[in-house]
View 1 (tube, rainbow over the protein chains, first blue to last red):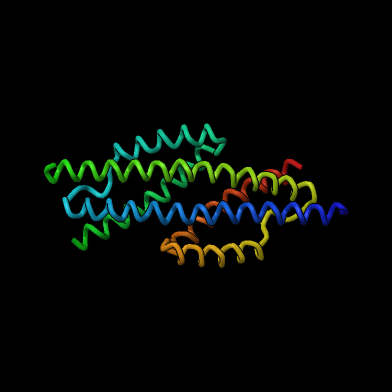
View 2 (cartoon, chains in turn orange, purple):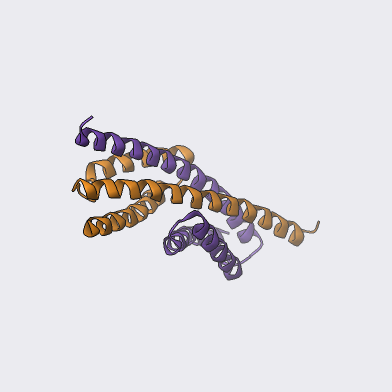
Length: 99
Length: 99
């Protein structure tokens, strides 16, 4: 194989691997939102607050360690987590309003 | 168990499941960034563009279907993906500048 064809083949193989990772992440996220939906309903039913800062702090601490251990950029992991939590809180607040 | 204790137990179990999902997601993200780092180096070495809009469009289309099928909010999935891609492109550009 010449260099261009080799590069294209490598790129294509890596992209295939990334697609597999993305598919697994979608499944995990869907699972995660099923759990947080159940939590949201539980909180709404019992009048508990949408956010729990103690829990969020514990999660950040844990994520920071997991990210560092797996070689994932820690700041990125925390930013992404904050992005997900934001969506979860939005959903919880909508459930609380409906209750 | 009275209702409060039952609620606390349910909440704690669900949070444990969420923590497991988050740990798996950190692993997957670390894996994903290892692949995109290799792609970034390949692109930098061969002077290829940091972004490939055709690829990004194909990814969005695929993700939209995966999200819909698994019950994940499609808009959220696309926003999260854009967030990840943004980080990848930033890394690719940094690699290109170093080359």
